[in-house]
Image 1 (tube, rainbow, N blue to C red):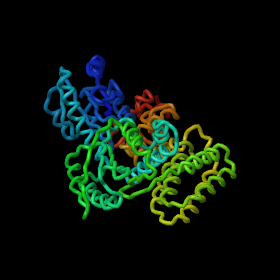
Image 2 (tube, one colour):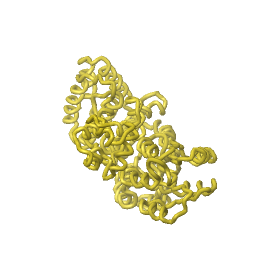
Image 3 (cartoon, helix red, strand yellow):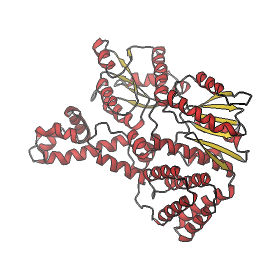
Image 4 (cartoon, rainbow, N blue to C red):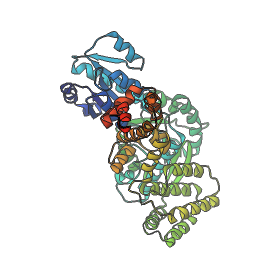
Length: 500
């Protein structure tokens, strides 16, 4: 589902647009109504919308300045300009920032909807082509494989199993596509993947492809992208294996989200005793190790709750009995994912490094030693008693270290630093701090600015604006400062020195 924000200083206009169209019918969620540019800017940073419908003339920050500032961030927000001013100059300036839709007031419901639907296609295309960082891709593969194993060996509802991994994947809002590849014999599976990899690298290199194989059928699924699925189906059918028939057959389906897809897939594959998962075109086997999986998770929970050395020893002894390297890799990854999701003693950065190192390990005994050492260290550590989680603390630390960056966004921190789902991070940050990220960022910037202003002269305003992340825009800095403090930076300096 795409997210939409409407920004207009005329209340009747923004509220009318918000109600005349049934946005959910078009798979769009209205996440914000903003009365000026400054409010819209903060809301965009918090909600990371796909589409913003904005007026040009607004107090505080006009629509063009809003578009300019967002265009300098890593957000993929698409804009539609709604204005009563028909001067061509506005359109030309907007085009510099990639805006292709310019609607003049008054405009009809049909015109708005046509623009929205056209941009929606671009959004889906860009969403599927977002850079998939190797660390994030590794986490996604491990999450899906863990869910697969849990679904096999645990008698729990699928949505309950998935809920534990909300920090790492979007199960609810992104559409997914599933291909069934029939009549693919197990002896030909590796050859099939070797032919698929260069094709995928060439035609859709940024798409993470998940796969599950059972009983001569391969199920490949991925987030929907603006490609030609018919071409992909023809490619599958064109793959031949010497001396065998019949040829491969395919069937493809679309799903509104990953949760629905997984519920369908897990029902089909969980009855098989041997299941194979395709992790970055490598084959991982998954047996019904029900007892080991259940017992390991039980002992992990006990060790986390009690902190007793005996519980950790019992878990490590259980893992030492595993004789399958692939299974031990996945089980260890599953246990550390659970620690990260439920406890603050392991950060997502540490988790990412662990996943990458484990995937490279080729020696079963060495992995047992490494895993035992890691678990003893983690389970003997005391969880932090801070009222905020390690994740939120990492966000605060990152903001302090990169405050001068004018394009600092929660999306960047979540995806490139924490390797977590942006929406999850945003909600958890707000819940723990009691404030939205944009408000927190502004507060930190203003507090830093106050410190600098006390020891600076008034002609240093531009330098201070740059140091606190307002870029080469002292006017924006002054507007932001006045909004938060009720006075301009110059007035604040005068007041501090007893001149005001």
